[in-house]
Structures are given as C-alpha cells and as structure tokens.
Amino acid sequence: MLTSKKYNLIIIGGGALGTFHAYHALRRGLSVLLIEKDNTPSQATVRNFGQVVPSGQEGKWWEYGRNGVEIYKEIQAKTNISVRENGSIYLASNEGELQLINELHEIYKEKEYASHLLDKEACLAKVDRLSEKYCLGGLHFPQELTVEPRQMIQKVIDFLIHDNQLDFLHTTLVKHCDIHDGNCEVIDSKGNKYISERVVLCSGSEFKTLFPDIFANSGLKLCKLQMMRTVPMPDVNLEGAILTGLTVRRYEAFHACPSYEKVYAENPKPELQKYGIHILFKQGIDKSIIIGDSHEYADVNATESLDFGINTYLNDLILDEAKQILDLPTWQMESYWAGYYASHPKGIFEHTIANKIFITTGIGGKGMTTSAGYAKAHIEEMYG
Image (tube, rainbow, N blue to C red; front, side):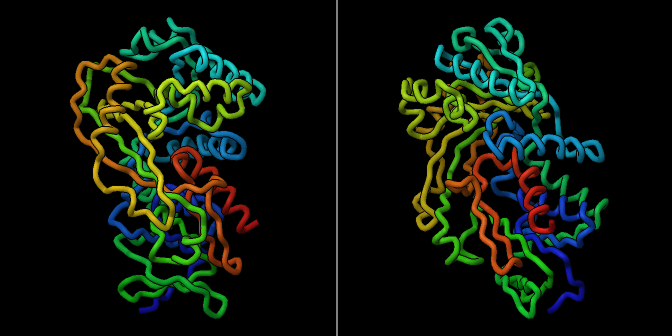
C-alpha cells in the first residue's frame, strides 16, 4: 500500500541519532517521518548511563557535545525530558591521573569551558560515600547534564509528535530502501510504501536488513557492554555523573594531555583495561545507581562472536573496583544487562547514495553526549 503523503525526509531508526535528526529537520520546517522497528527505542540509547559529558570528548566531538548540552536544555525548557544540570566530576586515584586532570583543566581554560579543580577534601565533601583511600583530587564540570536513559528519547519523540508535527511509526521494520524516479522509496515488512525526497538511516547495530554489502565493508565494529543498577538508595545522594580514574585513562579528551602516553603506559590494573572496564556511577531520579561498564568488540562481519549472556566474571571485576571507590550502604542489584553499540575508527560511519540516502551510524559510546549536536551539523550539511 502506498501512503499518499510525500515527505521531505524519512528517518529510519528512533534512537538518539535518528530522533535528533528529526528534531533539527522539523525546526527547518521540513516534513518528517520517523520509523522505529521496536515499540519504543530499546537499544543503545536506553541502555547507557544517561551522562551528557562533552568534557570527555575531543576535537569536533567536543564541539558537538557542547552544542548538544544547549539543545538538551532548549528542549527541557519546553517540556520535561528528564534533563538535570547537575554536572560531572572526574576522580583521580593516583598521581598520574591527578596530573592528567590538571592538564585537562588547563586545556579547557583555553577553550573557556568551565571546569574547577578540587582537592581531596573538596571531593570528599562533594561526592557522597566517596572512599578517602581512593581519591587524590578531582575535576568538576558544573554545566554538564544527566538524563534518564530509559525515558528521555521517548519523551523527545512524544514532544516532536505533539508540538512539531512529527509523523512517527513504531513497531515498523523497514525491509527495503531505494531511489526511484528521483524519489526515495521505503517499504516496510507489511508491504507499505513511503515516499520522500531524502532518507537518513540511523540503524545502530542492525547491519543485515538494509544495505548489508555496504556495512560488510564499512570497518564498523560492534561493542558489547555490561552494566548494572542497584536497588533505590534514598539515603545516598550522588550528584551528576561520577567518572573515575580508569575513565581518565580511557576518555578521548585526555589523549590531548601532555602526560597521557606516560600515564597510560603505567597500566596499574591490566585485567580491567583488558576488558575495557572503567567505572562510572550515575544516580537516577528514583535513587537507584547505574554502575559499569566493560567493553568487548567484534568485527561487523562476526558480531555473533559476542556472547549473548552476561559474563559474571566481568561483573565481579566491575563491582570489586566500584567497592574501592564508594562505600554504599548495600550492593544489592536490581538488574544486570548487556548493551550493544556500533563504533567506527573515524568516530562515525557515513555513506551517501546519490545525495538521497544518507547512512549514518557507528557513533560509538558518545551518542548520548554528541548525537544532538552532530545531527544538527549533519542536517545543516544536507540542506545548506
């Protein structure tokens, strides 16, 4: 069945990347159809910490993240999408990490991006339940944000539907996308056909349904992460995003620090770094705490090599390290899960077909921070 309406833009994939493309296209006055294969977005966008931390990015991705903060705040001013401007803090556990946060502070001073160095006592005062033995100092970014990952993106979609004339189809799997007579034709699994001038494909880690030959030669990788959530802890008050020493060693922003190579080479916890484990904490509105995470990778053509189960050994490594950092009243978990995201060596995978179909995926673990800003720049590039 052919739908009667012709759109300026069809977006396939309702995660953060696709939804923010829709947001910016609608702001330009374009007619937009957003198609999501699940009932609600259920992949990487909802399986993360909900931390919006541009401070961890470098180069253009820092710019996208900084712009993204303003976009989140702009939407939050119109409707509640769960944004809290409660900042982020990096904690240093040894002298090398302390040197790196000092150097990053100087880098951001030059960029006029607000950050504050905290000594050990200030960190202990600011971070509830922080272990005195773990922390030597910290770097605080007051303007950074947190969101509720399992709520935020659907709230944005609902806002776009009710206030911005977005057409949204859920539980709709797109099986075919092509160009015919100068228009894009999109056909779903029920045979329904949708017509548009252009298509943006933000398919996350789905590589086999649309354009499998392009993805097979893309250089994309699939990353599996393990995370967990505690039971609600009303007596604990963790403010904002809590990022720790292993994060200082991992996040791209620190690669620009003069001491990075030396500090990274010291590698005090090789078993944790082997599995890409770095410890983050984020307390939700319900007072539960998300803790993680680990990173295991597979080539785009061998994604099945990432086991579908939860590796309890990795969870034990995460928890053992977390217990060195915070002294929580209980470590009882409400849930454990695995998340999957696509990543690319260039930071994102982009492939354009006849200036009509724009494949855009593989934004990696920075999607919550950078998708809003990246999508704005991409829509501007597409439409001038």
